[in-house]
Length: 193
Image 1 (cartoon, rainbow, N blue to C red):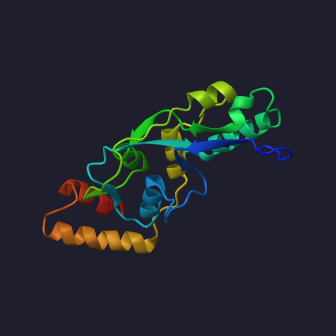
Image 2: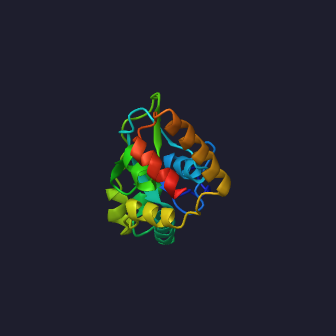
Image 3: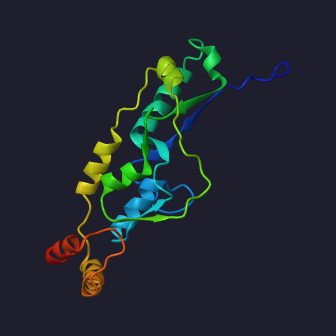
């Protein structure tokens, strides 16, 4: 900066796949959990791209909020670590990644695989620098959060149940089933409906 021009300190936080209450279930910023959640609510099969073994790092929105608070609190005292606010970029992730198949299993429901896309096979952010400087860590367990979230899901609507029952009756009449369930499994589901 020239003389008399104030300098501008900054820090950048780069998040892995964010999830949590209010997560998008459609659109450009919707991740696999939002897509699966929407499909489950509609009574649809969970769509898995490729073999489902692609792995993603997820971070809970509450942990993101805490990271932002820690960064902004430290920013109020930049003299403590002036090098942090020279445009440094910090990763914010949980430090573990999970396969799409794991996410689908935790959410529950039937799945269908579609053709693979060009996408990274694995994402995993290293948040150790942010953890070191800001005494922060990801605290939410993804599997627990999904379990808690799914236990609060509304039951399927009557219309969804009727559509599913019609589908099962058609498949049972022909004694075939294309999406991986056994005839016995179909009969049990029909009884339940």
